[in-house]
Image 1 (cartoon, rainbow, N blue to C red):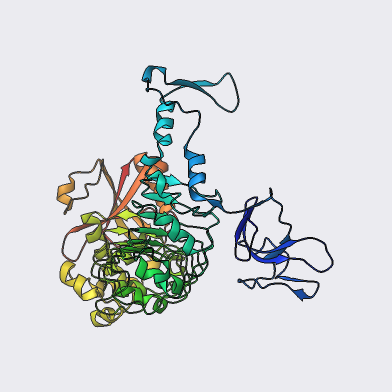
Image 2: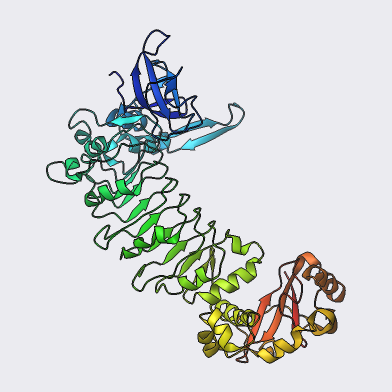
Length: 535
């Protein structure tokens, strides 16, 4: 079949769309003018010797080339069913009765005949795969699938496919996809990543088959790295009534606007990672999706999270905003208003550049009350209490009175009601002299530190206890050397904790694990206990 404008092709590892078919001035024979998926792959923008033959959709100056339609070098679209049969049906597979005792073979590693491993059961696997009607998970990525084939060509196989990967293929239109999917009655997961598909029709009913949406049964749709804009996704929405997971990463999407509660009513997960979203308000209408539980916004350029209106993102459980441009703690304060948020990833933002991972976690936990997982780390019961207490202590650095602190930290009064108010007077009195005086502490060697201990009495007697006066500017790295001399515990095997009492009277333990932080950073004061355990 001759190529036409709009067709998809593959040349070695590169994919392109045909934008021109014909002759080029100054040369003989037919040429294909193509626009490469990789805009750096070509040589021009559709012009040659001052004459424009076609225009690229990307507008990139090196996105296009002229190539010859070589029948072996230019790979074109193939029908779905023959590709699947070719991959999964082995003609050599036996059809006689299966005998397990005879299902033996050998595998040679790296082409070396001296490295032989006996195999058992390979024929059984081949037989299972050869029974095409039993296949439920099918991977046809990068196999030039681009056609549905003759009517009924797929349906006649009675495929039971539930999960289909058509990534990196040559499908050019949603019409072709409709013809393929309508013949796969069990299909619920469809992956089209790295494909370039033409815009769906303005009237999505055109894609109906016998009055039914071919995509109605889909629960998962992968469209990452397809350059599909949100407007086209919206156009497909009426055809996707049962969609629960939508993957849209790396599509240069910069805004998702005017989403209404009537759209995507079952959608639970949207992946928008590595797009070009520059502000929170560009995606805030996603908060109207009542079933949305997971939202990936990592790898964008969002500088702040705006105040979130009541009722928005009501079901959101897991949010990723890592590797954005967040630079103010108010963004995390605003996330505290989300009633269901339990899991958050937010590392890799500018605000953390001068903050240790431990202090960052304390701020996040202290500001957002319902979190159970922070940057992949699951919070235990005591961890939250200790972090909130330490967060209260950090809050006192920002203002001299409780009222002023509360204006800066929205959860301050709430946490004071739970853990007690921190002593502002003591902090103010010591702040002026902390840098230039020694702090009297007790350094103890204990076999372990029970996480559920609420008082020192519950810890029992230490193995050894030494009183020391230390500079507030001493680094934890240097403290380890002192502990090694006192207790003969190698620095590499030490686990150090700071024990302090919270305003409520309960014992609070904090890891001293940042080698380049000093005692002042951790808020060590006169009379504190530093515990060393050996691991």
